[in-house]
Each structure stands twice: as C-alpha cells, then as structure tokens.
Image 1: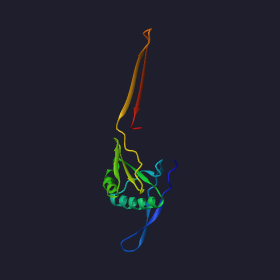
Image 2 (image 1 turned 120 degrees about the vertical axis):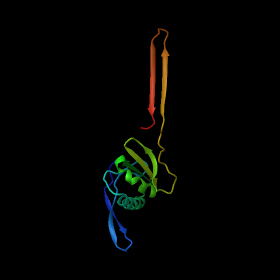
Image 3 (image 1 turned 90 degrees about the vertical axis):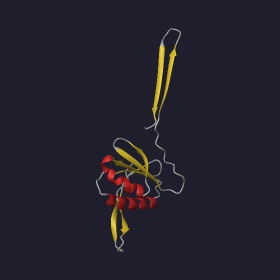
Image 4 (image 1 turned 60 degrees about the horizontal axis):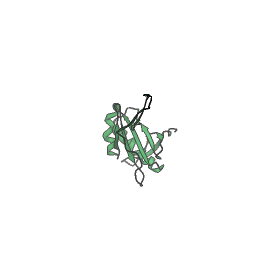
Length: 141
C-alpha cells in the first residue's frame, strides 16, 4: 500500500479570503479508506482545521472510512477529532485509534477484537506416547 501524497486544499475564511490548508496523508486500506498516523506536533485548533479540510477532501475522493492513529504524546488532539465525528476504536499502551465512516452505506470497518482463542489437544497412543497440539489465535492481530 502506498501512502497518499500530501496535498493542499483551499479553505474559505470568515473574511471571505482563502488560505491553503494541508490535507493529512495516509495509507490506503482494504476498506476503501485511509489510515493516517499523526506524527507532527500541533495545537488542537490547527489540527481541527486540517482535519476538517482533510475530511472534506477525502469525501470528494470517495474514501469510505478513515483511521487516525494518535500516539499518546498527541493526547491534546483527541477532543478535536471527536468533535469532527471520529469515534474511539481501540487503545494500546502508546496510541489511540479513532475511526470515522464517511460513506452513505453501512459501515464495514471491523470492530476491535478483545479475545484470545485457544484449542488444546492431548492424545495418548497405546504405547504411552503423548502428542499435544496447541493452537492459539490472538484476535488482536
């Protein structure tokens, strides 16, 4: 998957003038959307403006769903993302994943799995030999 290239979109200001706002870039995903990882430091107002412009641009491009990975050091941006329609998907020790479904049809983004499934078999033959089989599936991968 290649990352989408950063682009700029015009945004109309309240005084009637326009300014260029950089659209966040991301990697295309299998849900016809993008995964965006926020790496640069910015204030919440700048982030909200860029995110709003980015969502508008992604809708024009026909993107269906957006994933935003916010590292823990960018916790100041969570409220702005939620105000723009993003919802919590899951959290790990060092990041929060947020999603926003843009398409008019039903959301096809998977929910976050929270279980581990294990199967164990213990087989003994007539000679007293033991065979064990263990299969673990971590549903978080």
